[in-house]
Figure 1 (cartoon, rainbow, N blue to C red):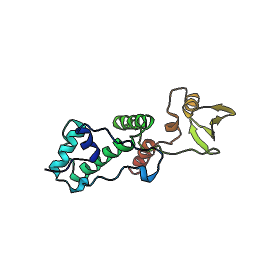
Figure 2 (tube, rainbow, N blue to C red):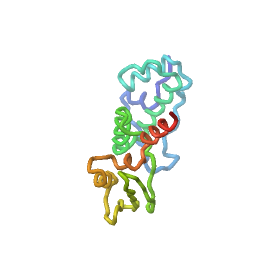
Figure 3 (spheres, helix red, strand yellow):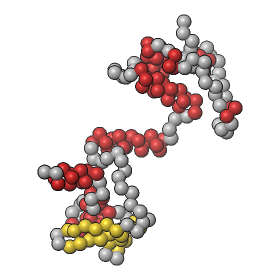
Length: 179
């Protein structure tokens, strides 16, 4: 018979209470590493451990290495806590936007205060000065580039896209230049 997946889960299955752990960061209060590491287990044992944690089998085609890493991550989350709710929400929104191909996962260009953006539109040159709390166009302050783009064009535009700050626009421009 193989040893338990980890010491704490074995205690809980036996009906014993979870050991209390200090959250003060003292290294002596941190949990000790289990005697048996995930790498020492057979692939079948790893799949059983996955089923115990997730109540379903591991994804098809998941390599042994990724299975070990995923299980180790789950154990760390159980012991030290998972990601914050804010970070989880941000990751979900990035994944959804990436699935829809509406934005690049890379946040792109980060504009520093003092940067000047220049755009030609219908024979007129428009300049925008970046401030740390907004943008300035023709002596007027705006909170977003999209408002400026809408004022210039008279139609709704993505401000970053209008001023050529998104990857999508740069990639299309590069593809057209290569023709």
